[in-house]
Amino acid sequence: MIKKNTVLWFIALSMAILLTDSNLYAKEVNVYSSRKDHLIRPLFEAYEKETGVRIRYITGSEAMLFQKIKSEGKNTPADMLITVDAGNLWNAAKKGLLQPVQSQILNRNIPDHLRDDNNQWFGLSIRARTIVYRNDRVKPSELSTYENLGNPKWKGKLCLRTSKKVYNQSLVAMFIAQYGEEKTESLIKSWVSNLSISPLSSDNEVIEEIGAGNCEIGIINSYYYGRFMRKYEAHAFPLALFWPNQGENQSGVHVNISGAGITKYSKNKKEAIKLLEWLSSTKAQNLFADSNMEYPVNADVKPHEFVQKWGNFRQNVINVAKAGELQKSAVMLMDRVGYR
Image (cartoon, rainbow, N blue to C red; front, side, top):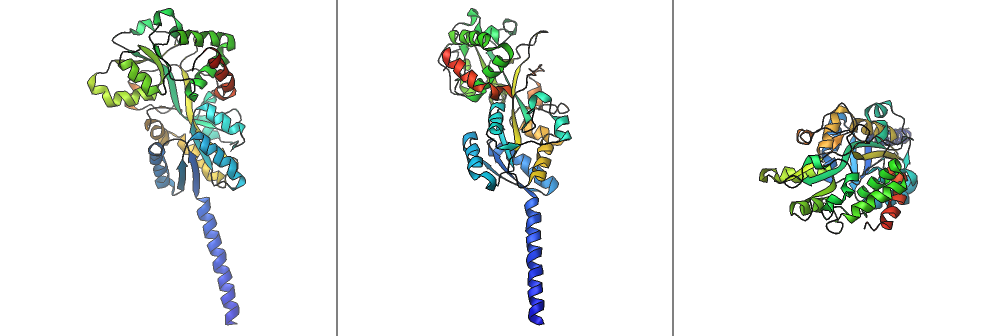
């Protein structure tokens, strides 16, 4: 009788342990992120403190994370993928790494043009790719549009980042969506003819070359300007941002996103969706955008005070998914006109 009771007790204890482990498993979310640790850790710590849900995460390049999720297949521990650039998010969905999410909260907090039509990925911060200029040599009144950078008056005065980087591939892809290939090819060709030096490896280098006087204007993601000026503002560095294409019949500033989606084989889908919704909330948006001096996607949230100093702009509202859909065409176009 004692042995029988012992067996029953052991079975009951084992079941309790299994149930407990299951509950613990349901209260964690595993994230694969191409965003750097210092940009996402404060968010996850805040969420853990607020909800008690544990966030486990790894960071790495988009290519590495995509391959990891693909090779792991149904056994992947990843519940959420966070990455930058709509082109990358579009490719993740195209590769079958993500799944659709139905959420009224996400639909309410994130504008249509900053999320996937099939709800497989959602923008969480906005990054404006805009004009930067040396304000002791160039007057704002001389600037107007992206197209204007191809004007012969800027011959030998333009610096650009290499076409090999996804940010410029997405920019050109969005131009194709807006203007068609023929007009976009003419536009990019005019930029190439105005280059002061060979295309540079980073937006930081574009800023540095303008500062060194090797060019007077360029195109960068606005947060690179924010990082630089926050560091050197005390030295009155002669650099300023300009928001192009703001005229009545013009398209607005090109924007891209950092964003996230729920992986196809997520084991903690409900908890992952809750995290994604929280990241789009007014409570979390400043944490998400401020960490890299980007703009919140949620219109109810103001940018960081430092970012607000740059002024308001109207953004292009073509769906950023076009950055992925037309990426291949953009790369071939840039190659044709000699933009390296």
